[in-house]
Image 1 (spheres, rainbow, N blue to C red):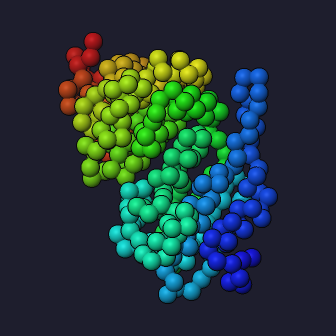
Image 2 (cartoon, one colour; image 1 turned 90 degrees about the horizontal axis):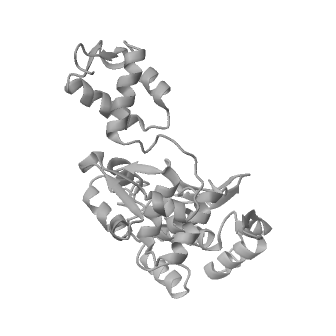
Length: 318
C-alpha cells in the first residue's frame, strides 16, 4: 500500500519498482551456448504505465490506482475516464495532457515523455520482446490497462533481436515489424486497425516504407486487399523456424483451393468451406474470395446470409 502520501511522485515510482521482487522474475531463453533472462515486465513499461496513471488521472474524481498481478498478466486500474479526445482505439497516436503542469513536472524529472502519452514506447518494448500490445479498456468510471507477461514465440523474439541488431529501425518500424512477425501476414485493413489508422490507411507507408525499401517486408495486392508480410529470405536469414500455415496464401491459390473444395463438397456453407480449407486463413479473405467467384459466375449459390450454400456454377469452373 502506498496511500499514506509520504512519498512524492518520483519516490513513489522508485519504491514501486524496487520494493516488489515480482518485477525481477522472467523467462530463460536459450541463445546458442548461453541462456539469458527476458523479464516478464520490463522496467520501462512499468514506469511508463504508472507515470501515465498518475499524470492523466482526473484528480477531481475519488479513487485509487490499483496494480493487479495475475499469473500471466498484470492490470493497472486508474479511476476516471480517458482525457477528452483519447479513446482505447487511438491511444497509440493521441497526445492529450489532462494535467499539463503535472506532466511538465514528470517530464523535468525524466519520468515520462513530454510529447505524448508514452504508449508508443510501451508498444515498442512489448513487440520487440515478442509480447502482445497492451489492451486498454474504458469502463464507466475507470480505465484498465492489461499487459501480458509471456513471450508468444521464442522464434519471434530471436527474429526481432537479429533484425534490430542489423538495421537501425525507428520506433514505428519496430512496432510494424513486430506486429507482422506475430501475425505472419496482415491485410491493409487489418494492419490499419491494429495501428488505429482505419480513417487514414494511406499512412501505412510511414510505418513500413523503409522496411519495404530494404526488402524486409513485402506486399501483394492493391488497396484494401493489399497484404503485408515479412519477406521469406529475411525469415530464412534470421533462422525463423515458424510454423507453416495457409494464412498468407496468395489470392489465385486460394481461389483454386475453394473451387477444388466445392467440387468435392457441393452445396456447402461458408463455415464448412472455411473449416475444410484451413481456419488459419483470415475470414475476410475467404468471404471476399467467395464473393469474387460468385460475381465472376464461377460459383452459384442458394439461400441468403447464414443459409447461403455455394456450388460450382454449371460451366463456370473447369
